[in-house]
Image 1 (cartoon, helix red, strand yellow):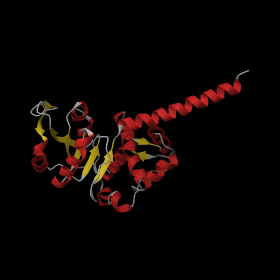
Image 2 (image 1 turned 90 degrees about the horizontal axis):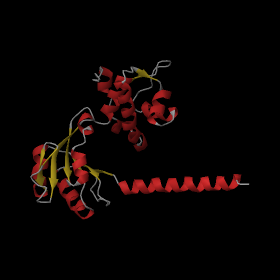
Image 3 (image 1 turned 180 degrees about the vertical axis):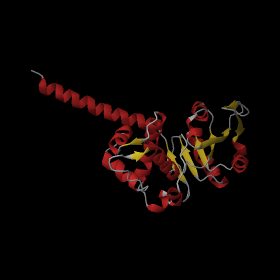
Length: 235
C-alpha cells in the first residue's frame, strides 16, 4: 500500500536530529511490521491499545515512542495506518533505496541473499562476495558471486553503503576494515566476533548462538520455578 507524504511530514526533520532514544528506534521496525500487517488487512485506523498489543508493548510506551515522530493520534479514532507507516518508514530511512553488499556466501549468506523481505523494506542486495573459488562465479539470487579481492571495486561500482558479514570469525575484521576503507558506513555482523570500527561507522551484531543461550536461560528459570511450585503443593 503506497503512502503519500503530506507537506507537513516532508518538513519534519529525521529522528536523528531530535534525540530519539536508541530503545525507541529499536521498536520502530516492530511497529512498522504490525502496521504493515494491518494495512494488508485493509485496516485504515488503529487505536494505541490495538497497535500496542500487535507490537507486544504497553500502550503508554507506544504513545511515548510515537510522540518522538510527532504522531499523537486522534482521540476516539487512533492512528491513521497509512500515514503512520510513512512516518516510521521515513524516520528509519526506508523511503530511499539502500544498496547492500553481502560477504560470505555459505549457508547463511545464501539465505540472506535469497530473503525477499529486503527489497520490500527498501534494501537492495547489490553484490555478493566470497573467497572460496568453488563459490566465486556462482549465481545466487540472480547475482554472480564476486571474489572478495574485488571488494573495493564492487563497493565503488554499486554505491553500497551497507555491508553484511556472514563470514567465519577470522575473516570478519579484515573484511570489515576493507569495507570501511572502501566507503561502507554501516555493517550488519553475523560473524561470532566483536568488530572494531572507527567513529562514524555503525555496527549491528546478530549472534544466533547467544540468542539461543538467552532462551535456554529463561527456560531453565521457568523449569526451576515450576519445580518449586510443584514441591509447594505436594502432599
